[in-house]
Length: 237
Image (tube, rainbow, N blue to C red; front, side, top):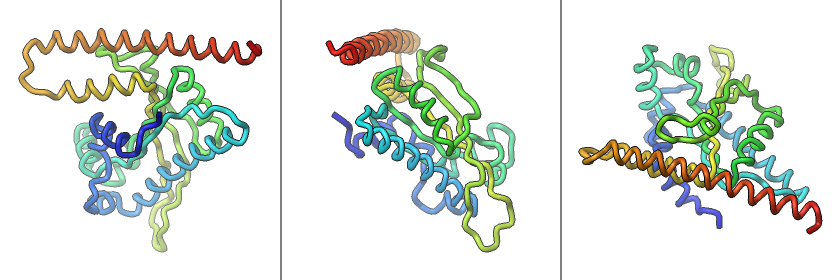
């Protein structure tokens, strides 16, 4: 059963996704200025691309590989912190030119195969160009984290302004694609790693790594079962 939007938001908050999202007090609009419209346009364009993909598959009675997704624009505070950490000026211009994750999306799929199918489908839309891929599924992080991260580029997003003094910027969208199991692990790992004064912390992180490996094995088994069912259906069994 698909999650409600409230459940999705609660889970994303637990994973830190919304820690980087709009602060709701106008700070983001003030910081990004005219660039904010371009960021919102890219966020909307990405959501529209997914919706169009879902509609096209529904028309052909084909399965849509996305369980749920959420998008966000990086908050002004988070953008400034990252710029400072990287040694860049804390300005909107520097953020747009230097940061690739001002617009972000997290997509959760059912099976590992869905992740790579979705990556290819996004590349085939023509709306975005693939810039960079980091495959933490084939090469997990040392702590066990698994996910596919891709950077997409949307060129020439419009910035509605009668007195625009700059060319429309190239807008990038960082997309994290993972299975339900990977998302479950990442949510709990994010929550636990920020707990303070935990006795035997090394043991705890070792257990988290072991859980990640077990979850990865389960993901592979579920993919195998899914393919088995698909092949049987195609063979008319």
